[in-house]
Image (cartoon, rainbow, N blue to C red):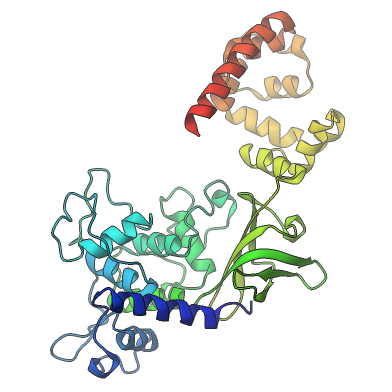
Length: 403
């Protein structure tokens, strides 16, 4: 992924220059930075040295860095804001940050939706930042905070103690795919464990060295598995796609063939050039719609089956779908016999009680009234039409209100 190493250096330089012009302290000058004495041979020595030289972090008066020390949320906000060039502001919404020394940094990250705070309206600056919180914040810095909202549960967990039920699961998986998590974590992430100064330096520096590309798709090659991008400066860049690259188009997991010329695209890769995320936006296609519908059913119905249904090919769509649907119906509360009767459209074999329970289950699952579903089962199309018109009006109204 030969992307933006030079561009990133330019952006960083411009951000630092802007900070100096605005009179913002960005840390000691290179001549003022003293080498810290206790990181020689440490696994995070390179990352710590880099951030110290940048003036993002510094040692203690005794010349030590104390790599195993902990980092609180205020300190982490300052490190992130300085490293990635977030301009400090003084308009915080957190009730415990007014007048705090870190308010400008926290406000800057809050304005960019990088930090979220707690439900009680606090930021809790003195609380140690956890590994999970660090992963979430850095994923948002990389503008990948929305990745995995609909499909992360389909990913294989990288760590034994962070599965799809954990609030930070997708953030941790994004961080893992960007290769910014320290190797010594192994198969256990310990999400609630406070992050050390060394771990913080490593992850922040690794993301700072990641490669980014943004622009318009100029070419897509299935043969070479590449995407050509023309950025805002008119420079051509090439993104190499491999089996580990996650591709989204219009917010739905897609593949290389789905990316279209003239799509707007944002790509993020590791520091060594491997593309890990490609986010494309463009004209909505039939494939986008079928993938979206499949995602809504959590993969029970494949995009190919959705496409067959849209063309009225019910028999074609049913192939291979019945076992998965039957299992899903049983999960929703039906018996095995009821599920099979439903899939075979054998309404006579479906007892009245089963029909009622099925209607209630489907109502909860898809959000329409049980009366409408029972009317369809009875083939009472007049009643179904009345219920459907009401349902459609309610759904459309709610969708517009949510826009």
